[in-house]
Image (cartoon, rainbow over all chains, first blue to last red; front, side, top):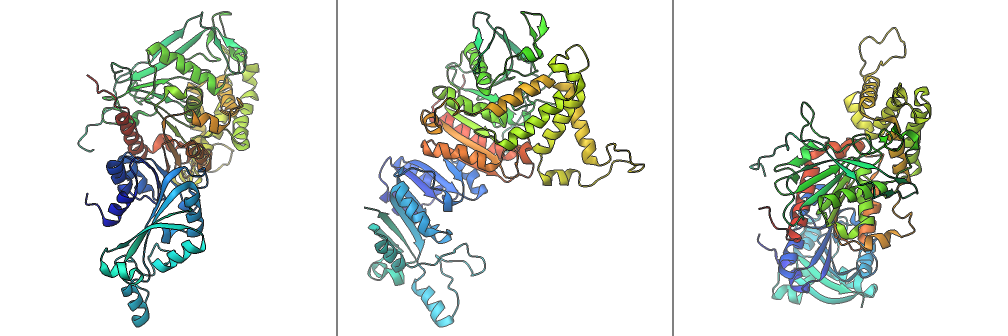
Amino acid sequence: MIIPDDYKIIVEIIKEGSSVLDLGCGNGDLLSVLIEKKGIKGQGIEIDEGAIYSCVAKGLNVFHDDLDNGLIDYSDLSFDYIIINQTLQELRNPHVVLKEALRVGIHAIVGFPNFAYWRARFQLFFLGKAPVTPSLPHKWYDTPNLHFLSISDFTDYCSENGIKIKKVYFFPSNLLTTLRPNIFALSAIFLISNK
Amino acid sequence: MNSLRCESVGLVETQYFKLQKQEKFHLALGGQLNYIDIAYETYGKLNNDKSNAILICHALSGNAHVGGYHQGDKKPGWWDAMIGKGRALDTDKYFVICSNVLGGCKGTTGPISINPDTNQPYGLSFPIITIKDMVNVQYQLLKYLGIKKLLSVIGGSMGGMQVLQWMALFPEKILSAIPISTTLKHTAQQIAFNEIGRQAIMADPNWKGGFYYGKSIPAKGLALARMLGHITYMSEKSMEDKFGRQRKGQPYPFRFNADFEVENYLHYKGDKFVERFDANSYLYITKAMDLFDITASGKTLDDIFRRLNAKILVIAFKSDWLYPIHQSKEIVKACKRAGLQTTFCEIASEYGHDAFLLEIEEQSHLISNFLKTVYKENKIKPLL
């Protein structure tokens, strides 16, 4: 399997032997990579039944559940990391899930597509159309995304809610995205915590 | 996986084990049994370090004959499609055990058995039994077979209750557990359905306070209990798909006989059941289900689950309204709180509660992969 760039960053962030809960773990590729490379103790939550079968075939532990209420039963600080990679924008209540993630996990790793990417801005401003970009590839009528946020939006969100941004990574990784991430980055990964 | 040849275990026989008289068996709610016979079947080979044993627990009307064929039978065991070479419970790898529950009528001591002290069937002199007693009897069988630890314990419905009881009673003796379509305890509705079944049996004039052996059996009552049971085992949709409003033969003249196909089916199922099940067993076993509650001993669910170091696979079915999904989610919740490595899958089946016997493909996938992982993680030596 070719490891995607965002997975590489997440592997880099997570410390050896940590406990990890992946919200919206899909077919379990990321958890498998983390188990292989970092010897983590992993748990996934996923809503799609087909994806559950793939996870179980990979030997993963996974809950078939809705993420919007998937964390209630966990006690505080049950995990070292909660991963919310490319799922935040699909949640009904991202605010609740983020709060819960930082209650249940010491850290949260949040990855999402940047709605303020320059091509999205161009399409909206000059063409007057809902943007379709490599990180937001869906048409308005078939998108799973319920929320559209930019890197600046998320940074503001963290400061408004007293969340500490420990690290942030932009994709693709280059000089432009380092200088002006909210214009040039297709997506971002934040490592956040309450303290 | 298609290249793998899948086969039933073929011809099998029920075996019997007698608990010795000096090992008086004390029951959870008081009382004791001086003699217990246990009917069981095994498939596959126990490996040298006895680490590949899997116990299957059966449901209300099940028995020890879970896989393969008995001599002369056309129908295989009740979960045959799951057991055998290349199947979910791969008998090339695992040693599979299933025994008839205490209180049953398929070889293990129950109300129909002869009490050696009186030379009469126990009837209603049989003590009230619980799921815990059933599990304790299974434990005695495993001791006799020399098995100290189970690779897994699996069961659906009342079988799932036994799995939960194993988790509570012998946490150190199981490496994994698979409770399917089950609950931590019955709700008022579940108790109510069982009570109607029991009342149907006891209202039959042939029941005679439970001492009907050697005379006419309470066939009508038991059949009625089974008819009610069948309604609760199916979903509205599976019944509609199977029967709809189809009529059977001439609808007129109208005489309140089996007129619709669904009526005919229920009558047939009821009559068939009477041929193979004892009415008193039905009373005792349904009562054991209603009484089941692993927290009844005063321990909290957290206390019970935190003592476990096992991997758990919880399976439930969307259209099951007798043991609805939220009951399985309660089990999952307890696993989460205890930090157990757990998998939960809600299979989108339309068969209702019966799905655990019918949805073979999905369950095979989940159970075979789950067991492979448990097997690998415990570095169990392969068979010689």
